[in-house]
Amino acid sequence: MDIVKGNMGWIEVIVGPMFSGKSEELIRRLRRAEIARQRVQIFKPAIDERYAANEIVSHSGLGIPSDNIAKAAEIMDKLSPRTEVVGIDEAQFLGDEVVDVCTRLANLGKRSSSLAWTPITAAARSSPCRVCWPSAFTVAILPFTLSAWWKATS
Image 1 (cartoon, helix red, strand yellow):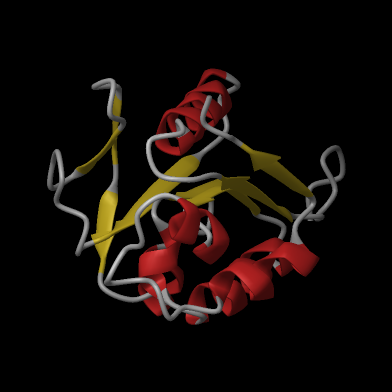
Image 2 (image 1 turned 180 degrees about the vertical axis):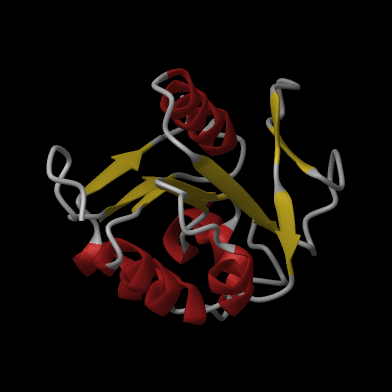
């Protein structure tokens, strides 16, 4: 346990409809953590190949390197013991298992930072994603979050 920082982790969530800037906010938060010299690991679902294979990239072209994972449990396998902040983009593609993984990370004292995902209700209002539509992730993660950042489109 770190005497100065304590051993308390938390979960932050970035929520919003498609094209609302969630990935850009995720990248901003993770870059700030890196500037603060925190050890950061970043993950994205392997199914997300929109802009780059090994990067989270926003629609505006801003990017940050990431590891690809096929399922949420791989985060625990790939996690370095020294990692302080974990970023996950497009978390809805990882299914309900990501809720358990994020809870475990927080219990280990990690900041499960910036889970960016399009919730079911937002997808219904914009254009539904055929891959992640059935997921109950939206309902399951919110009770465990320290902060939720809602990005609405204008």
